[in-house]
Length: 163
Image (tube, rainbow, N blue to C red; front, top):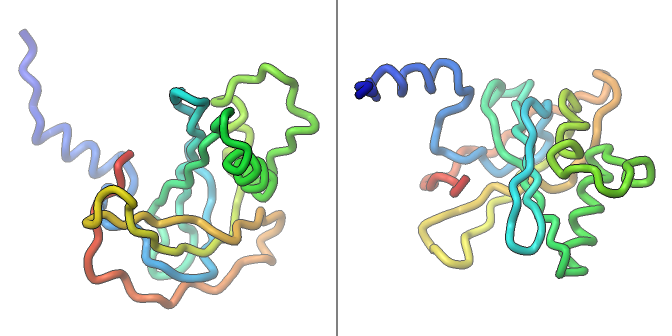
């Protein structure tokens, strides 16, 4: 039987895993980041597509956050939000063939740079959790579009996100 050295694995995760902080990104405007990882996960009513965004400028440069979108095939309102956000990210469903795997769609925009704002929303089921939501997303096509760094202070109390 192999002995798992958790202390070594935690050190590796901290070194190689990017932002290992449990603190969510502060609410604020004018973030600038790059999509560095992407994927999809099957859900009962569809899929969750996710993008790992690394901040490129400002006091939080190097930290990461998650942008998630639910592709819920049974909810028209949620589908509208999904397609609107995907369009803002540069995903053009007019050229994506039907039947394309959701993970392939999520990975189409790896390396894409975006401007966005962050707002904090409390969990509807757990009052101790707060979620950092990306809003006002705009795909950036040139470095001339760099936005100033957010000036908002970090929230006084945060909880880890459930991903």
